[in-house]
Length: 202
Image (cartoon, rainbow, N blue to C red; front, side, top):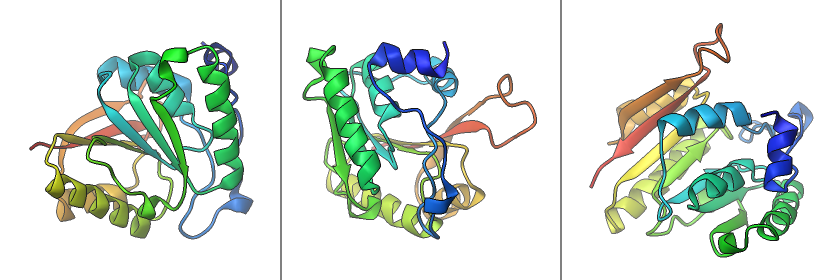
């Protein structure tokens, strides 16, 4: 299914190109995960209706709506850009107009990722290289603090992970590499085109 067809199915608008003019040292430009990549991820990794997923750097909310549509999971999008946040809220209203059961399962927060207060229910965390390693490490520290306060199984899911992200998780956290989902059929010449899942068990 084409990108625009998925947006139409979900009754949202998440199309857009990355804009490097709006990039900064710590926050990277908007670039949604392709639907075809999400199809591959969730054909190899499943969620439940009780999972609480946090998407850091959610943009217009594509991942959030896709996950809720597929699994009826709870999803929270954290976005620093006020314009994308407003679009995400409009998408939420549009999506929920055709998905009444999802009304209390989708939320968005406009804030710095490192200031997001990880709840005791949040157990899956998604990153598509949204910011620098400095911010990533602070976010992971917040996740680990929440784990210490309320122990539960946790996963960190990364798409197109940077070596800095991987090294940080490997050498400075108790998270363990659980699975790699390579997108060979989609991107044959780029070894970074993959999803990487790190887990922490209670």
